[in-house]
View 1: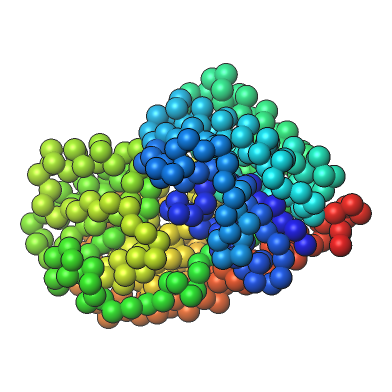
View 2: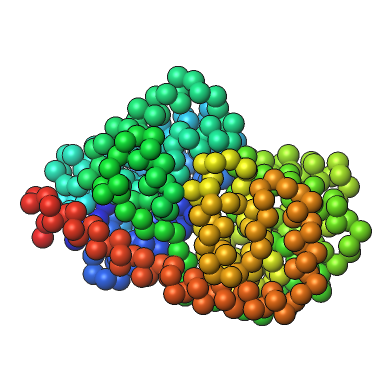
Length: 415
C-alpha cells in the first residue's frame, strides 16, 4: 500500500507532530509499505531554515526509507498568530501544488493537524486520485486558538470552523489522539462517532530507554545532587508555565530543588524575563535539544512536569510528553485534568495537581522530594504501563488496520 501523509512538521523539527508522523511512517515502511510524507522545509519553532533550503521551492529526500517531499513554506518564528496564519496558508498552497506534482498513485491520503489547513491539501490530493481521505486530529482548531486567548471569535475563527466542518464531513475516516476529541467533534459538529477512531500518541520504545540519573547532563549543567523538576516541550500560551515560576518562587529557600525548562516557544522570552524579575536562582532555561538527546535529560531528572491552562477543552488532551516521561521510568507531576489525569492515575505513576494552582504544585513537589523510594516505584509502574499500552510500533499496526479497511472500500485505491 502507498500511504501519503501530509504534515507541515517533520524531522529534523522537534515536537510531537513531527515525531508522530516520522515514527508511524517508519513503522509502516518496515512492514513493507511505501510512505510519502509531504511536508515543509524545517524551520519550527525558530523561524530559521537551513542555509541550503532558504531559496528552494521543493526538495526530495529519503529518511529511513520514507519518501519525503519538502515544499516551500514561509518561515516564521512560533510567535504571533498573524504571521503563523500566513505561514499555514502558504504551506497549504505549496503542499497542494507540489504534492500533486511529485506524488502519484496513493492508496490512501492522511493529513494531520496541527495545522488544520494542511487537511485541505490532503483532501485535494485524495479527491484527485479517488482514494480515501483520512483526517488526523491532534489539535482541535479553532477551539484551541480560542482556549489560549490567541484570538477572539472573529471572521478568521468563523472561517476555520467552516473549514473544520468541511474536512470532518469529507473525511472517509477521522483519527483522533484521544476519546475526548471524538466527543468534542461529535458535540460541536455533529459527526457520527462511528466515523471516528482513536490512535493515541505513543512512544518510541527503542529510543526512550531508562538510563543512569548521574549522567552527562547532570555534569554538563551542574545539577549535582539537586532534586530536578524537568519540563520538556513548547513554552507556549497553552502551558501556563508562569504558574510553575510562581511555585519556584515559593521554593526559593529550598536549595536542593531545581526547575529545568527545555525547549522553545512563543512565551519563552516572557518566562525568562519573569524569572529575572522574581530573582529566581532555582530555574534554568535550556535551548531546544535534538530528539536523540532527550532520553539523557529524562534520565537526569527526578520528576517530569506536565502543565496546561485550566480550560475545559484541555481535559480532552493527552500531552505526548506524558508517554516519554513514563517510558523513561520517571514519575509525573501532572497539572492537566481529564483524560491525562485518568491515564496517569491508571498507571499509578505520579501526582495530580489542579491546573494553575502554584501552592498545590509547591506542596506536591515537597512531598515528592521527601519520598525517593516512592518516586522509583511510580517510575517503574509508569514504564511498565506505557510499554504495555502505548508502544508506537503496536499503535502503528492498529492504525494500519484502519487504513487497510478504509482503502478496501475504495475500489480504485485497493491493491
